[in-house]
Structure formats: C-alpha cells, structure tokens
Image 1 (spheres, rainbow, N blue to C red):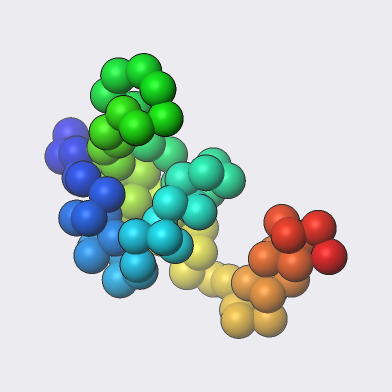
Image 2 (cartoon, rainbow, N blue to C red):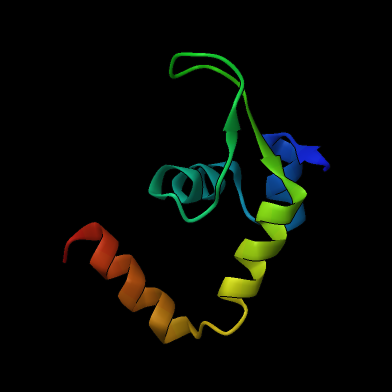
Length: 74
C-alpha cells in the first residue's frame, strides 16, 4: 500500500492543498493520522485516492454544486 503526503495527494488529484483538506475534513477522502492532535501529519492511501476518483468520475458540474450547497447548509 502506497501512502501519499498531503502535497503528493493534492498533486495526484490535481487540486490545491486547501481543497484536499476540505475533502479530508468532510470525510469524502479517507486518511491516516500519524499521531494525536490537530497538527499530526496525515497520509492518504493510494487505494483511497483511487476510490475517491471512481466516486467522483460520474459527477457533473451541476451535481457538484448541489453537493457543495448541501454541505454549506444553503
């Protein structure tokens, strides 16, 4: 199992670090926290990245906007 740092995972997903952090915070993308506390480093498994991409591959721009509105509570 290959583990990616936040920076490597963001590069693989072609998103910024803030976008990746939002995906991790909402649970859309799973990660492993190495230690305790909010500043503990995280690692993302390659399998989790592949699973996330499979889930998102069929999503249209409009459905992504609706999901974002739902998450934001609007």
